[in-house]
Length: 84
Image (cartoon, rainbow, N blue to C red; front, side):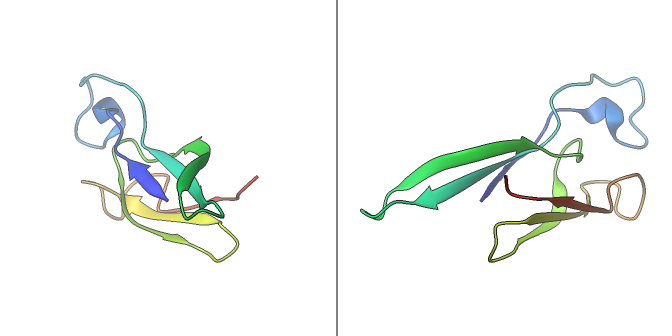
């Protein structure tokens, strides 16, 4: 799992009027039989910049916890991203 920070500062509390852009993204990777990593899927997160923490279950489900710069504020304090 790799979390790629977003550039959506305009959606961060306290930064209204700033430029809006791509939110954070998560990229899932799988290990092949030859021990190489290959991209499996990519999902857009609700986090405008980046989650403070995230966890991935053994089943591949991703949970993001809180937002960079807005800990405890806003709509994505807990988000579950199931694997498809």
